[in-house]
Image 1: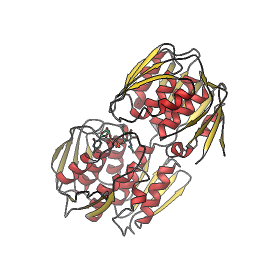
Image 2: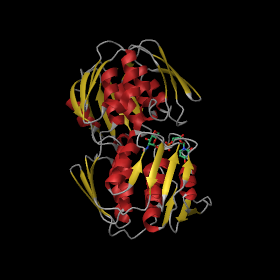
Image 3: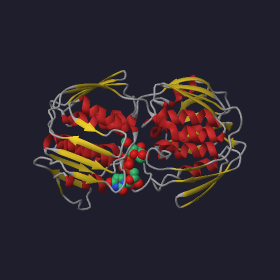
Image 4: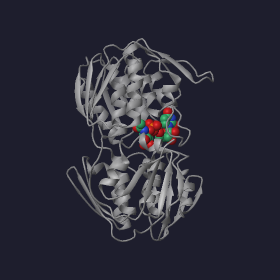
Length: 418
Ligand code: UD1
């Protein structure tokens, strides 16, 4: 277990080049097995979840080489289609290998995926889509293992009752390998899905409808090697915007399309932040204490659930009472108890939280319990009086390449501690 220490109230000013997107690169890595050949990805974030996916792909017989931020995956030697239980449990995205391995090998053995403990996180919609397209998937007999096989996926129309990101991605993998046309309706519209469609098209697939909730796939086209650049991480960018908002800083973020953070920048502007957007650039300045606000998380383009706890940290310092409604994951208020240790006043009831903003938070020892909750504690600590020690730093490392480096560069007093 590792920890970081942050001494708060340092003026934050400067520029951060936003790392590549975790939620975009992980499904691309899984999809690389669809083609028996090479995939070259640029702007790959050097985060634990990427290292973990590389480890899984290597254990299946692929060769992954990460040099700087360029990742080469050669899947021509793929020799296995079963993922070990301990590998599956390391992260949620391991479930993307179910559709990808089925598509390539016609069979797959996986376990229930791991990831942040932010709620139930079932995979029924993934299984529904893969079964509809022709896969036979055995029932989990309580040991968590799922065996699946398919002679050939067959394209058809599928309607998702809820826009699940992961289920849309798994269905896309199967549809790309299927004979005929697949129409996926009720798809998630997260920007990372659009990126995945472009990536699949760069491999030779034909996916249309990016950015809408209806994706049409002409399946069974020959795939080939590809070279693709991953976009900037909107959740990391949103975290740093909120760091500037909480600690009253001035920041320029480059390396991402600012349009993908519309729901976040709209709220921050209403709360009093000065924000400008330009091509590939976001500027934020916060000199006054922000005003309270109300947010409700939801599938894109609504406010992202991944930034809900980070926003809770900002609201803990805002003027007045803010309200949050979390509609995506039921366990995403676990960070509230840690923020309260720092002096925040938060009442949580079911899927709603009320935050009475305070003028000041105070440094103490807190524990990151999940990835984004850990980032929220870092944001609170930047704006807190005294020193905060955040345990469970390994959760933050799953998604942030080097939060200490990024924040130190803009003036924060932050370092790893024993
Ligand atoms: C992805 C993101 C995660 C983000 C989430 C929502 C990755 C690697 N992770 O997770 O960071 O917080 O989208 O934007 O991209 N659900 C079901 N059945 C299913 C699948 C999902 O009921 O088969 C429910 C979930 O319990 C949850 C909701 O749908 O309540 C959203 O989940 P989903 O969109 O699938 O999220 P993930 O793909 O797990």
